Length: 259
Image (tube, rainbow, N blue to C red; front, side, top):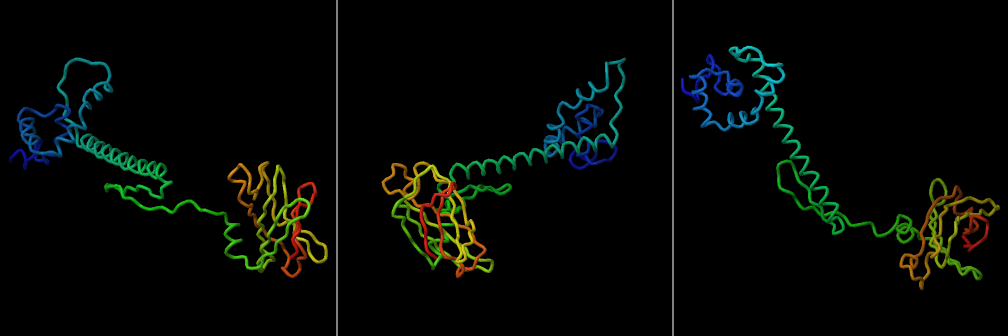
């Protein structure tokens, strides 16, 4: 039986002898046969490299050296455990490589996300370039104000010069209202109040105004030149609402909008 096809120990597959060879317990003919096989078998060469150093580890676990004795050949269970450990180690290394690819892809997506492109890597495959949607240009309140509100009312207070536009839509639960607020400076804390035809009041929404304000065309702060958009709801039918008022938390009125 040849070194490639035959057994190194008692007729077993020659591949099974890699553990015994690494421990140095094969006799002369068996070791010679396995070494001939090793020269042409990449699989056994890789397993032998993984098992390198296992003999000194086992010797250290065995305790202090005693009188010289002939080492006993390893049993099938030990060889099986060694080979299982090799297979497990290779699988863990493969998982670490795959995890590294995923982390690299995530980092690339963060770095170039502003350009709307991300790099995504599949297991074992090359990275692929995938387009991602850009940042949302507006808030949900602004979207609703410009694209869903068909009923809008506007007013400017003659004293505060604050301008408000309130858009409304009927809902099964009441009224959805969106406010566009301009020419208001802070710092302030404000509320949009719905006032019914019977004088009942309900808070639709609340917000803070920074000192540089909102909707101030000549402001040195770029963000302050844009209006404020907020939305909320009132448990009233639109026909039951008489007006909307924008007030500060201390009760000072900024602007009133007739419904």
